[in-house]
Image (cartoon, rainbow, N blue to C red):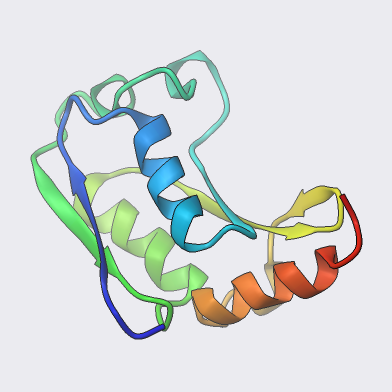
Length: 116
């Protein structure tokens, strides 16, 4: 996957919308915001970062986990984690953070094959 994915980001953007947009492209990956009431999926970005400025995040299947997490942090002061599905659980890809998102997603698909 070499095409770019663009996520619009404003103070009023629902966190759930960002997560759903990400999962549509990478169904075996999950974009997580920090736990807690302020980061509930029903909330908006302004609840996490009141000084957030409008912009976009662009990435592709060639973007690594490290790179995408850094883009969120540097551009919007948002701390996110990307998790990969492994069977029935979601894991933080500690040893494969330098893999492209497309490879991470394929790894999640392979680890989850035959498991629901």
